[in-house]
Image 1 (spheres, rainbow, N blue to C red):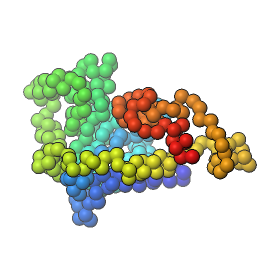
Image 2 (cartoon, rainbow, N blue to C red; image 1 turned 135 degrees about the vertical axis):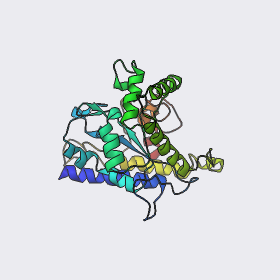
Image 3 (tube, one colour; image 1 turned 135 degrees about the horizontal axis):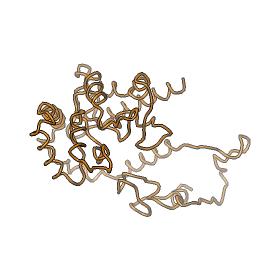
Length: 296
């Protein structure tokens, strides 16, 4: 029952994020089709990582989720039908595997389940160099990686570096008949469908009038509230009779120690300035030590 409750909370959180980014679709919005309330005030959402990324064996990152199809549907797929109903525009495949099969090469999950059973009409995008992981050493047989992922149902490939090689090999595979043109047509149709509803052709650039409000006082207050509400206290003191928190009102000195105490980079983590995280004063802000002094 606890697992079910967690799954339900996860479903609600994911779908709330979708509507928070894209806006609320009308009641008659067709199921599975991408939706965007305003091309100037909303952004496209991406449901990820499809699927089972949070249930890998021993919790290993990019690992293997070992479960039956029934458990995959009952636990890991649970948030996705509601995301389809809310018009989520894109879905990103997971680095991980399901019972040994890489998600980036799973025709069953991307095409049969996501696009077929769930009725997803947006596009599926790979993770960063995700297709490279389909062979060892990574990316060594690039044509194999491309064919496996595209034929499985991948519509857009995230390529940070060697896009010239990707284009060359993709054209070769299509001309050789190893990737059918119908698969290319389907991918292009899905990508264009999302681009049309995004308004990117009419408004290719962001609204510059919104620049001044980025990082404004209201934004920082909201970010601070989010930090407070998302903190998890693992243990509050040695025993229930002697709780450490809340601190006494008349406390005069507090020791904040450790490598993370005065390090904004560690607090930010990944995908802040650099994708893999960084250390030190990577941006303007308050570290734990400085914030504590600021709060007091």
